[in-house]
Image 1 (cartoon, rainbow over the protein chains, first blue to last red):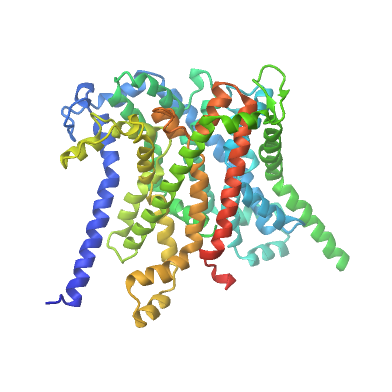
Image 2 (image 1 turned 120 degrees about the vertical axis):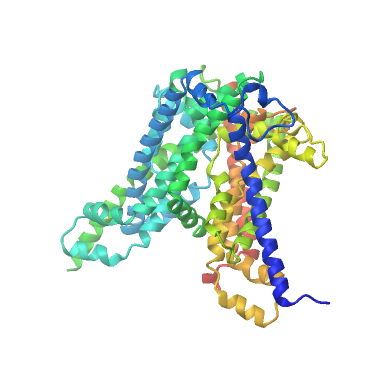
Length: 282
Length: 298
């Protein structure tokens, strides 16, 4: 007996849904596990088999995360770096992208190719001389090495913004020129306002990159009071090998992750759009 | 009139350079300059304190005989060889499933994408705890189906596979891109293939894959470059151990430069990294001629 075409289609669809739901569930397990551990008391962390719903639920852990060390200060340091980097990246990259997409100058296409190819050079290759440079400027243990480079453009974001600027119709610019607009006015009054989604995407990517950066702060920051949240969390690890504070450590990790998760939920559209722009047109 | 136009063009050119100045400076100060400096430093012995001493090819000779250099290269290559193709295959498979007119698509897409949103130290700490051999969730779940799980990151044989598994958690990152590109494949192609009697498997390999091959190619290139930059996981979770099983290249580079202050040797390592990535990318571009399909170049 053969199954009818309709029955087969239904079976296939059920299988597809089952796979997708199972996969989604598996991918969520680490988050559940983290949340669950972060709400346990330290004794319950070391129980086997583990309990998914902690009993009792210790909300205190989230408070302890702030009282056992200056976690608030670390979060503030990270926030400062993020804000300065966003300002730097948006101003420098939009200006450069404007030049590469809307202005004509000799050598432009060559330099654009050069820019694209530098996207493929990992920062680790240039890390040592850049460190030596900042050290000779006396910038070790300051925020400068972690903020100043943002003001000199980042190939990836320049590329993303350029792709977006190219989609803005040339006619608007011509009309503005006839009306006597200067280049700067075209840039600031036409291109930038029309590019809010792309600028939003760049801001979000910058946020994620700087907030989660570990190597940069690890190399440049020494004093405890200057640590970023990620860096502090990394140092906390060594204390953790003694086997204590796992619940608080998970609570702290949760706190560091939350801004990224929230940002993603509220700005999902920009987020996915940016990924698609750069991922598809590469 | 002609003179007026050339004057305009010159004005535009000057403005063009002006607006691009931040990148020109950045390109010289943070990219080209450092690459040249790193090349020169790689021929010296330098501890940041005394003046650098020129030792010719000394660092490169040491490097060839340094088992840890080879270990770093091997660990990183194995990681790239597994995590990148598995990530691409997984992301593509999920994207194809999601492209079947699924109800609640945006919810599923969000869930799958969520792990790709988080990264860095918190994720490394979370996975260290997941991989805990005695109290971690992974071995607990395995015990439910009667498997006694290994020591994961604490076991020399399992440490690198553990990090590969962890990387697959972010598979949703690529999925979003593939999904978007799948939606751009013209439906007429599929309709024609169905009329010709092509099976769905055949349609996948003969239409879907070629049509989105530029996207797959881009992900491949960036994925491999990304693999050669792995640092945080290795530093936080295993610190290169146990017994150098997860000594990623960049971790070894970091240790040489910032823990042992062997700036010359670390620069040689950096330059080799640069060359390796350059060669890998070049080779991939050559191979791409055989499998990547660009519609505009027909």
